Amino acid sequence: MRSIRISAVVLGFLYALFLVWLLVSQDRLPERIATHFGSGGAPDGWMSRTSHCRFMLTFGLLFPLAVPAVCHCVRFLPDSLINIPRREFWLATERRPQTMNYLFGHALWFACLAVCFVAGSHLLVVDANLRNPPSLSVPLLWAVAGSFVTGLAVWIAILLFRFLRLPK
Image: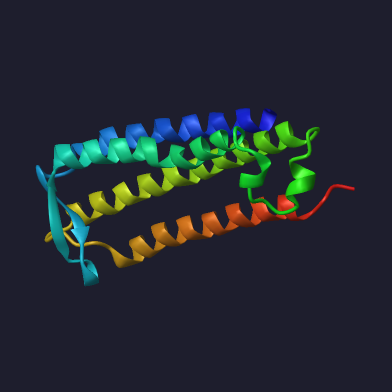
């Protein structure tokens, strides 16, 4: 339970930072902003500033919570529908509650990663629209996307490592 509390506090802190970033940055954007970019970073899709900020707020709040919501609901499924390594061991009656708590806590760490990714995506749009003419920074795109993919790979590796090995 301590792990869940820690990850929930970190997630709350990251959500607060994301909301502040969204509020502070919206005034720096023009009324009509480039929100989609083709090859080479040239804009090919536009939105109003208000629509973009509403979308980012909605996406930023809901996308990160998708995995924790699924992991929370998994506790209500029968064991036969849960696919984890060494399922019989981890879902044994005496370990099932701890396993489900671990999955949920680990999913909250994914949510932390996802909030950072959404904030980074907004950073890409803000940065692109501060340029004249608007253009997406490809190195910044690689940094944001690469950080998310690397974080996701580490998150998956930790999850697999946890369930592949049995405690002594």
